[in-house]
Image (cartoon, rainbow, N blue to C red):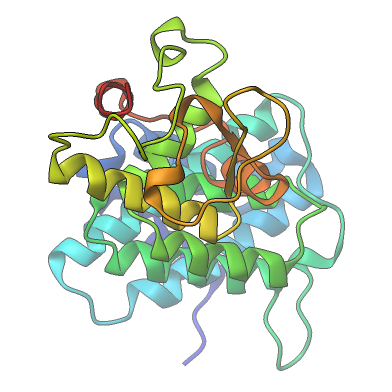
Length: 274
């Protein structure tokens, strides 16, 4: 049975409102984006109307699926963050991407719907709920990132799914390091020496960082600053030398760009890496 656009919008608003426990104030902005149907997105121009229609259609479909109460909260929160940011960016004068991301054909939905479904699926299943806001941020950034293909975005979603919240905090620490003096006094040599009485929790953290290295998201500059270190294991990591690769920086900007992290969570990691 085909639903009308108005029915999709009502289902979208209802699902988004459920996410308030996690998304907080973002819920109001997202509901406002859909408040009067496609006309409510007119501030973003004709493309804004397309974004609203595609979003409402997919959210209406997702709302009809069987989910637990907690899964609805997660999905609603991710959607709230996504469309709240889309509205804010649109109102600041920016336009959504103008490629074929929002185009649909008979028998084929748009890439925008595909990526939104992938985003919400991961939100539904994500038990580390601190990651959920970043998923919403990712979809919003995709709407304004014409240089990122659907194929690349799908890879990033699977990559994100494999990372822990703490690994994402490590990436945020790397990005924030130049601006925060408290993050510039990290250990300046590796762990092959002076590692007596290391706690198992520190080793676990270093293993997580080593996993980021193996995924090609981070690299490590040598202690002298000349060139980069090839890591054979966690004990080769030099915390002060941690940097993004090109892939890592692109990944970070899509998921964390314009998003927010808990500073205490990042500070805890920095303290363990001193």
